[in-house]
Length: 153
Image 1 (cartoon, rainbow, N blue to C red):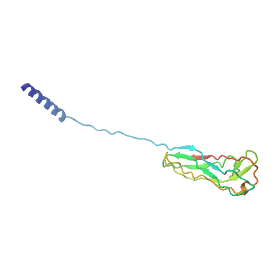
Image 2: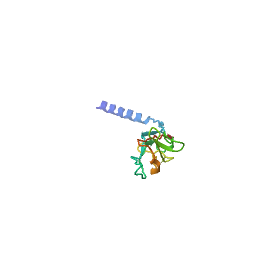
Image 3: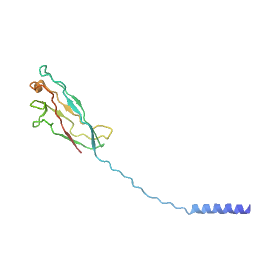
Image 4: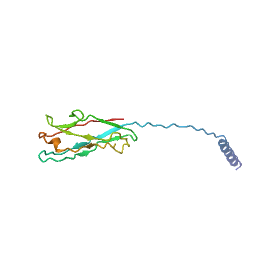
């Protein structure tokens, strides 16, 4: 019994001595990341005037589908365009692939700011109405144009 009491006392003393001599150290850990400023185009959008009847005439309002572009939150984006494949100076034109053209105008927001990957950039593409005079003498056929928007960020 005396032996057991001695062993218990020695073990308790060693345990207390170990904690009395413990030391601590601290260190700092650097954490960093870099967000890239980028944009991704998921769809190009469109301006569609539908069927035009020069004999019936009338103003045609286009159906506009917005381009879908997502940019880094807070990224400032400048947009420019090429006036389309069939432009004549500053005038955008749809073409039937031969000699027929139909003039049109379009617009968009000039200085949008990205809102992150979940929110599309507000380009606000628009196509102006066509008046009868714009297509009254155009030959029959399908007309098209392609506008290239360039996003600079």
